Image 1 (spheres, rainbow, N blue to C red):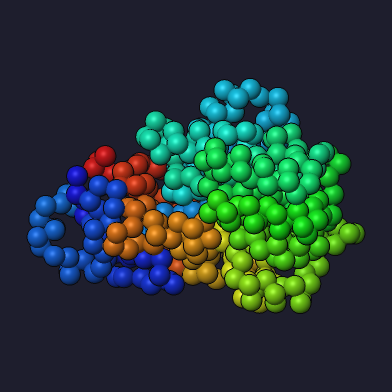
Image 2 (image 1 turned 90 degrees about the horizontal axis):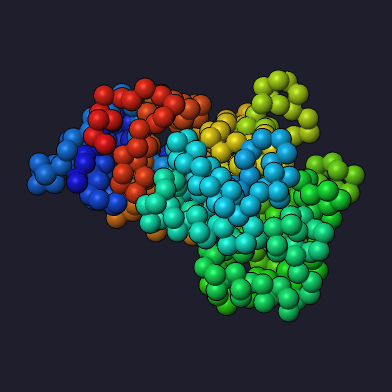
Length: 402
């Protein structure tokens, strides 16, 4: 079926471009035409079903660059994951994928689940067996024995063992490799500020992944781990907290400049957990994000969804947290759409409303280029060309097209 969506505002994802009274023609899974509604070719328009969204804003579907589908987002999530069976985790991951989609997330990157569960869930969603965003998935994060998330099955010692692990994961069909360059908060006995691998080991992971044609995402809280990840040539750095040995957040100016010059994308994982603390007037130490943004480091939006206090349905709360930290709405929208697509290497598929890309769209009330909290007023989600009614809001009149 061919559908022609029109709205009073159309944000294309091209650096804040907004078309007044815009239209998008969707043919199957793909966008066939986009532009001012009065310019749509009649030969295309007459064959389509018109979906008039009226005063709503139409924009690209959102991208969460850092999720954990195998975690439920409530306190104690990691412990429950460790005690769950593979079948229970598979069901949970499918349910969490649906929660992301209901929040307007049409693409997500899952950065760590036990075994090959991520690949199974990705393929189930892709085949239409379950609703969810298009998924980019890693396997079990590479770590050290007793290191961060060792219980997911990715602990290895030495360069050769790490290379073999990369070969096994890419052979199983992962889209990228996740490596724990430092410790993490949710693993007992793991030190966030301390590195877990030598430079040679990290370089071996990146080299072996490159041989298979997949990128590497590095979890790095400590400054030393961030620097080591950058030297190794990883493609994205997750968290990038700049923790020093005392636990203080202390961005290193020279390292921040090197990050900006490298073009490596950083996902600072701002979530509902931070936003709620801020709104209670108890934010604690400020994240490194404002410093990174001011220095030109390319930022992408991701929430660490699934970890304690970061439920999958609350993606937009993370964007609101980025606004609380001083990022302008246009920057946040780019971090959540077109730039995130580039970081995930899916920019030829999604991230913008453009001819030939996948029809991943959302419609909201208000203008998110003025206030990103408008993204909470979700009225419509279109994923891979399929219109989906938002379950948390009454349908708009034209949602009857389903």
